[in-house]
Image (tube, rainbow over all chains, first blue to last red; front, side, top):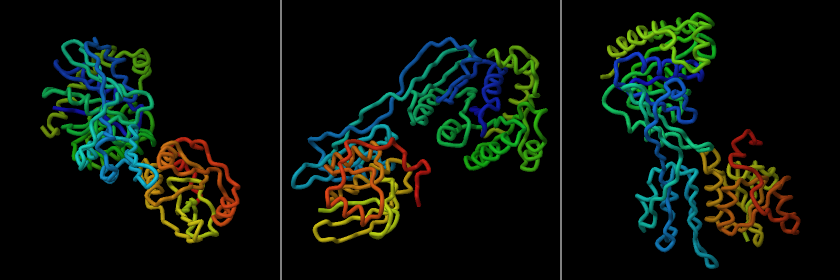
Length: 284
Length: 126
């Protein structure tokens, strides 16, 4: 079963929940940090890293001896990553490639009537894989300035197995989030009971309904803010799976990079109870 | 010879659009015949690579010089590859620009004048 942990708003406690859940369930579980722009689950988990490998994306390389500047590649490119300058009486044509705009879909290569395009590769980041106890930890790290997070997230998720997989997703509702959540059997949305948390929770709920993934909400710092988040969940029929109070001791534990269940083992039961509820609601 | 001025409107009295890739109109002028054609820029709301696509369109149209406010690096590379003269820092009405160009009042830009995504950062005049 694949359980993803997401949120509209950043900083609500996704990693607290994903790592807390991973450390509370029976081994083995796989914890996969898909927040490749700023992965941080390893700070809580402190895995033994066993393997590190680079991840590449494809971009087209034009064979100048075969290209006849027909323009088909440019026509099929959805990202304007190829430009064909037709030749004239004074100069021959040119086909320009802009690798940083290329999403690596391969359409240009597929449609080129001259078979003039071959695959070239550029590195976008790396994957690290390791263990914590009898569990497996995987995360990806995107190179600074790199725009193509989804291919790295897909590469990270390819390492997921058939057992219990916990995905720590990035915040928001855009492509990296969708790529992270894709294929999940259930999604935990972590929020805080503030106008900001609620605003972004509503967006995340819309996304999950669109994706058809069953979901529930964890309200973190639940005794601060207002009651609007709880009321919203009630009126929308969204189950509140767990509430974590605003507690100075929890905050201190977090500030030292200690998982919540290590300093407060009582929470293991809460996470396991939540897992029990999820199993009933999940798609498989 | 055909030149192109990026424009906020579709006629000679319109003001220059300071953006190249995402300009409202391309006003194409044949300096030999005086013929004028205003082309609605269908690329302007594109997600990305708009400068490249607009530059490529200039090449297809057989434009020899582009006069505009600013050109980003990808558009500049595309226009250069097509051997198109690029003039940036241009303002005023399209008509004024044509006259000034004909009298040799502009200098060719040696490179891009702004970074990528300039035209998406609230720099739209229209």
